Length: 259
Image (cartoon, rainbow, N blue to C red; front, side, top):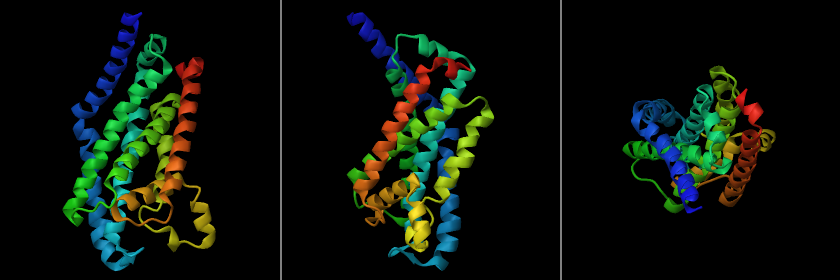
C-alpha cells in the first residue's frame, strides 16, 4: 500500500516537473513576450498618451496602467499555458493515458495547474520588475500582492484547462481568447477607471471579473481601488471553485474529452 501511494506521489510531481521544465526550456516563448509587450504598452499608453491624460484616481496615468499590465501578464500566461498543454496532450492521445493511470482527476488537475501557476506568477514578477525600470519601486501591500498573483494564476489556469478540454481543434484554442478573454481584459479597467463611465456602464462593468482583478492589483501596488479587496477575493474564490467543479465534470465525462 505504501508503494502504491509513493508511486502516485512520484507520478504527480513528475507531471508537475514536466510542466515547469517546459516553461523554463521554452523561455523565449513563455517569458520573453511578456517583457516585450510591457515595454510596448508603457511606451505607447504610458509615455505618449500618459502625458496628455493626466491624473486618474489621483495617480499619474503611467502609474495607473502598471498594475493592470502585471495582471494582464499573469492572466494571459496562466490561461494560455494550461489551454495549450492540455490540448496538445489530447491531440497526441497522451491525455488518455493520464486518465487511465492510477492518478486521480485531482492529481492530474494539480499537475497542470502547478505548471501554469509557475508561468503566470513568473511572468507577473518579470513584468513587475520591468515596471520598476519606468516608475521605480511601488508596492503598498506586498503580502497581498503575492496572494493576488497566486489566486489569479490559479483561477485563469482553471479557465485555460476548461478550454483545453473542450477544444476540438487548434482554432478552438483561440476562440475563447478572442471572444471572451481579450474583450474582458480591454473592458476590465486596465487602461481606464470605472469612475470615468456613465452610471449604467459602471453597473454593467461590475459583471466583468477582470475589473475586480485589476482593482485588486492596483490596490496592492498603489493603495487605491474602486472595489473593496475582500469583495474581489471572494469573487475570485467563487470563480475558482466553479471552474474546478466544471473541470472535474469534463474530465469524468471521458467520452466527451476524447472526441
